[in-house]
Amino acid sequence: MAEPVQRNTNEQEQPVPVLQQILDNPFLLLFLGVVMPTVFYILWGVMEIVTIPMAN
Amino acid sequence: MSELFRTCPRSGLVFHKAAESLIKFNAVTAVVFLAVGGVLGLLVVMTRWPAVHLLSADLFYQVLTGHGIIMLLVWIIFFEMAVLYFCSSTLLRCRLATPRFAWLGYVLMLGGAAITGVAILQGGSSVMMTSYVPMPAAPHFYLGLILFAVGALIGCFVFLGTLVVAKNERTYEGSIPLVTFGALTACIIAIFTIASGAIILIPTFLWSVGYISNIDPLMYRVIWWAMGHSSQQINVAAHVSVWYAIAAIVFGARPMSERVSRGAFLLYILFLQLASAHHILVDPGVGTEWKIFNTSYAMYLAVLASMVHGLTVPGSIEVAQREKGYTNGMFEWLRKAPWGNPVFSGMFISLVGFGFLGGITGVVMGTEQINLIIHNTIYVPGHFHPTVVLGTTLAFMALCYFLVPVLFRRELFLPGLAKWQTYLFGGGTALMSLFMMGAGTLGVARRHWDMAFSGAPFSFEFGGAAYMMMGLTGIFGVISVIGGAAFVIVIVGTILLGKKIEDKSEYSTARPAVLPMAPPAPANTGTGFIAPGTFALAVVFLATFVVYYFLNWMYLSSVWPMK
Image (cartoon, rainbow over all chains, first blue to last red; front, side):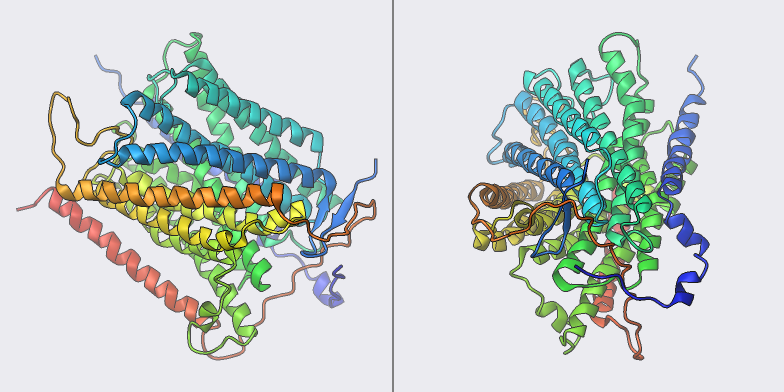
């Protein structure tokens, strides 16, 4: 069984970059991954369809 | 209750007992459906082959509906459930969250697939996978799809729950491994896909039983494709994860840059689903801004991500091979790769086929102007077969050649056949797809029983080249199906007849060791490229991309001569 790699203490104490924090949060990624296509594909597309004028 | 784990002595993988059973059941069920879908595919290809023209029109559309739903949804999503449980529980060395819910999801998926299958067999639901309204299918056709989707959604949340378990119980150090991150990307896309399916399929089910009087066809198309195309984007994220996993398994390769690869997966999460809009490019009801944003600006960021993965996976293999001493010239690392190992050959053919055939043609189809020359022609399945069959299915087959012996503790059955299977299946599918694209460029329609239009009130005669392309599509389609059958024989044979491996690993309640953080990739201390062979291949890819892209603009200019 592989043992944990020994790491420098200073390296472990470095602050985690913001992008890494985003990538480490699955629920934030889920939110982004659902909101982006919902807004740009579904809602925008549906708004375009419902604003088509009715034929007389 | 104590959780039971075992460590596979050959692979070092840690299996949670409940997760292992679920991985086995989902993967085996997937392979059974692959076999059924393959038989239906053979019937489709033998009908579209003009010289054979096997089935009657009614039977053709019935079989085509079954082929589409089984291959594009059932086989792949069952296998993806196995991949999600593997990438969470096994790779993070933790217990699976709520196995009972995972079994409930499995039962719902199986029941849903069976109900939709019965509806198709009864003959009143030959509406193709897209089931565009107002073309009606039987109510249980939609009900089965809804149940299947609910089951898959449960599987996705079990995966997310397992990530939470692993984090809380500190079963890994640092961030989740890249392969698990890719599976998370697939899971997120799956949740959006299933939600979109619910938005449109539940009202359509209510319409089919008479509770709703009308479903607007354009609204249906826009929202249905948020499910229909995104379901194939789950595959892309899943098979890219499998590429990374196989590079690590076969070569011990580490990603060239974890940061860049994770960034590319983030681009998938943000932009990949938007590509659904290319199915609506010829619909007049939505505006140009919506079409261009979704299929160009946004989609190109997802394409960029695929190109990053297409560069970093072979690049990481090249770096690993060079570390082993294969440093002569630009391509010794590739020449000396284990081409007789179906785990590697399947993965590499999947990567090349997905990039050169599926990827380039996807961009062509996503360009509004040149989409017009191939829209709704057989070029479209010519694009998605290299994407879903060559890319996803072949990558999953390659993973099976590694995982099935590990899971079932048996030697691979007929290893000589397995060695050739990836080439047979990959070569057959690649050439079938190329000839489909050729026929589509000449205008041959997709999902059409008779390209001769026999008995139609208005006649149209395709030239000999189109017939030849469809004949070659038939020949290579049959070869592809033979390759698929070889895979099913090897896998089913391994499970039932494979020689038992001496594996004394027993389940125990001992907690597995914590998964250590991946060591960083070696820094490039030289002055040249760390992976020059991969860079050369990338240049060839980009040159092919540019030439083919502009070739299609040339075709477009010949459709409407400007004099």
